[in-house]
Amino acid sequence: MDFRSSEPPSGPSLADALPETTTAAVKVVIVGGFGVGKTTLVGSVSEIRPLTTEETMTQAGVGIDDTAGVERKSSTTVAMDFGRISINEELVLYLFGTPGQERFWFLWRGLFEGALGAVVLVDTRRLEVSFDVIGRLEERGVPFVVAVNSFPGAPEHPLEELRAALDLPGSVPIVVCDARRRDSSRDVLMTLMRYLHSLAVTPEAS
Amino acid sequence: MSDPGHRSGAGHDWEDGSPERLYVITGGRSGSLASGELDLVTLIVARSAPRAGMQPEHAAIMRMCRAPLSVAEISAYLSLPVSVVTVLVGDLLAGGDVLARAPVARAQLPDLALIEAVIDGLQKL
Image (cartoon, rainbow over all chains, first blue to last red; front, top):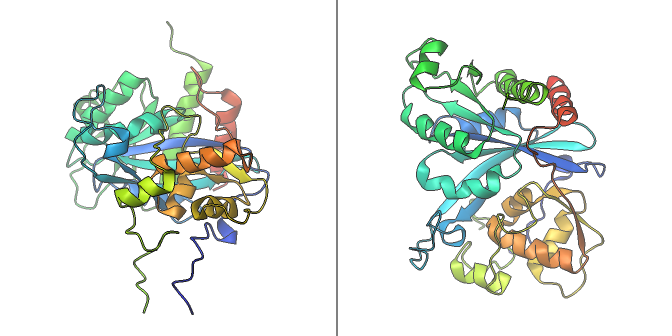
């Protein structure tokens, strides 16, 4: 076997190929701190093994709103894991996990553009990342739900206590999940979709 | 004798992801999702088999896009940053070698029928 053949990476296996009838894609973003279980959640509901796409800070620009610092050639690579769920013959849903820390917000521009909504995945042992994320999503007008990943041994808080701690509006759903379980992760996505549905049916009074 | 942890890209003599390699692949151009028409989930479909003499990365994209494939997946399979992939896919689009199926973007408010379709699909999981 010649592993150094000039054949470039071949792409998805036949089993992972989308049907030819797929005409449209939508995306949902899973956002949270490191180790909170974003990739676990994506992996438990994805029909393909989660893939990784990378972006470098140099190309996206380190300065969020000006060009200061662009000439500094830092080349930090940030990886985003993502998965896929075929909804029907025409429609496919992509799930992107992205870190919530402020220094990675440069990734968000392309990511949230056109996204249906977001899931803020929360670890009760580290709530502080979630504060910033929630504020930022509200600023950007991205609809989101909050999912608390239940880690064994993590302190259990009543959801309403967490809602208060996160300063979350009463209309935003908050649920507990086990990101390792497919049905639980699926329910998180359902919660988001039902919330989006409610927003579409009864738009906030202006 | 192969290193299973190392997936060599089309230019396997280059260190994966080195700025020099990326520069050569795109001819120094850089793309941005924010400025372009391509989204992470824009589906790309090849209109034909790759032509002889194509740049290896272009040919690889055309091969893997025999069935629809998102920009994000192309980036993952090629081990190239999205900003590089958008440039390469842009070349192929300009040349009429591939077609792009634009994503369904969220408008001011989510589209009810779209949300209902996703709910139906998730229920079947």
